[in-house]
Each structure stands twice: as C-alpha cells, then as structure tokens.
Image 1 (cartoon, rainbow, N blue to C red):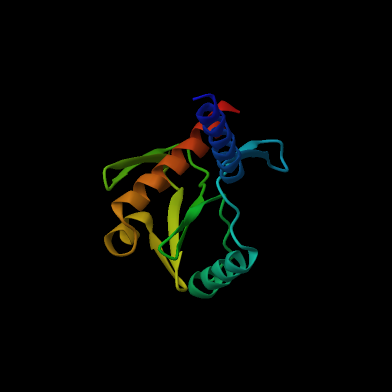
Image 2 (cartoon, rainbow, N blue to C red):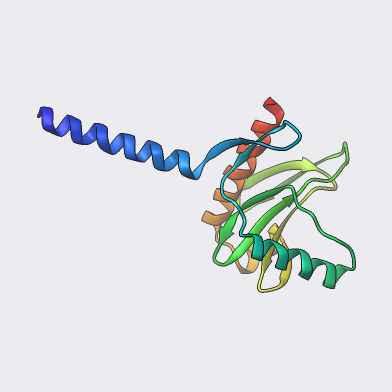
Length: 143
C-alpha cells in the first residue's frame, strides 16, 4: 500500500510538471502579465501576417494566440473600443470590445470564429478556445 502511494505521488508530480509546461504565466515586455498557452511557430506567424497583408492590404498584428485546432490557427486581436460585444458560439460566451475579433486562419484563408465553427472547428474546439480566451481575459483584468 505504501508503495502505491509513492507511485501516485510521482504521477501527480509528473502531471503537475506537464501542466506547468503547457500553461504558464509569463511577463510581456510592457510589464503586463500574459497567460501563454503555447507559442505560435514564427514561420506560421509570418505566413499569417503575409496572407493578411496580401488579402486586405495592410499589416496585421494579433495580441493572443489561442491555439491550433484541426490545422486551424486561432488568434485574438484586441480592438481599442469601450463598447462591449457579446458573442455566443456553440454555447460558449465570448465577451470583448466591439472592435476586437477572434480570427481563425487555415490554409491561407481567414475566418471569424463563428464562420470557422460552421466549417472547420468542432464544438469541443470552441469550448477549449473559450476556456483559453476567458483565462487570458481574467488574467488581464486581474493585473
């Protein structure tokens, strides 16, 4: 019995380390605390920015990488607006400023999150995006 407890403790320690490796709190250059789920591959990021500029004619920036699902990259761009927008997609509520948007990029094409849910992302993906988005938002409001 004692041996089983040690195995459970070791498993708990390994899971804790894995969780910390996946989700950690970092510090942005401006001193804001930012919750990072994962880092977007710089090559993919460059491709996204190039695709945006080619399609829309102006440079693109995004504020948060929310993950990659089914080969689709989900990113959040914060808009500078005091008006609040509430979106419910797949039963998940996203609250952000009116000019903010969650974009999905797949195979050089951009979608809104709602459009991507209709064609690319599953309900489970949307729930995960929502959880990530809300953790980032809560972390930002708490700092």
